[in-house]
Figure 1 (cartoon, rainbow, N blue to C red):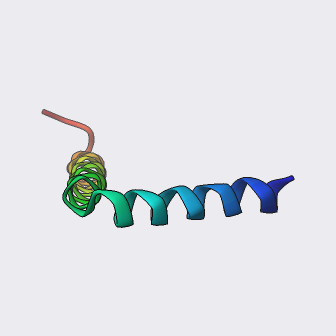
Figure 2: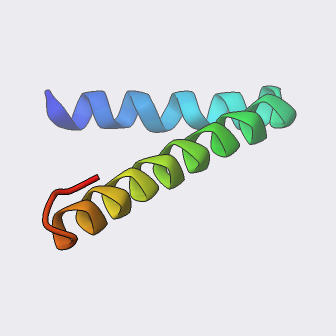
Amino acid sequence: MEKVGLFALVVFIFYVIVTDPEKAADYVQIGFEAVSDAAQSIGDFMTWIANGGKD
């Protein structure tokens, strides 16, 4: 079942890229921004912990 879901996801991704490359690029940009924001938040949290948890 897991392989079927992964296959369906890959087919959907290729379909979006082929039918609307601009929208696919927007999705990739949104994904990278989300990962970047998450990494920044983790970095801020680790800095807060390293400083003893003080504001």
